[in-house]
Length: 236
Image (cartoon, rainbow, N blue to C red; front, side):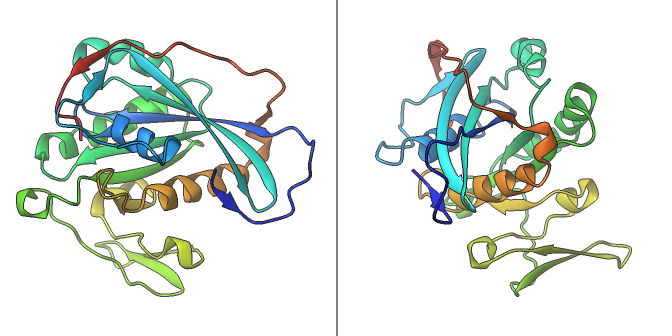
């Protein structure tokens, strides 16, 4: 279990946070979720299975002395499941939007996913953008632009305006991405295979969500779902 901070009040109910994974098929959403929620398990496999419909994982963490139970909804990226996937956007407090750095189409589809998020979940939800599979540098087709790694990460837009994202040393891997700047969201390049920036990304997203506690419920009842059926796919 990830623990950020100490001394959380024993016996106090955890805050329940709904986070939805979104993005095209085979960008590695399921691998990212598995890496984060099952640290001891192999995150990737040559015969990995793509999500059919919706999958569901729970990750308990403690962040700044606050107990949190993350409900992570892993949605299918295939077009035929698009309506089903986006129906789960309502009620979410956060989104992890993923593309594959070796697949330009998955990157170009991000704008459409952002539109779906705003239409289904509203403009106030927190979103983080992940460029996954950074371990496949030799196959990269989506360029990377790094930001300044200082005490505060400074993102500069083409118009010269700057946005400062305060963070501690855990968040020094935030990188600059014009698309993330356009939508005003944090960006990481990640690798589910090598476990690069996975926990940092979820920790930052959770921290931003908790700053809007009015949108978060306490965990008095736990919803349990059976795992979705899977299909073979190159999802890592």
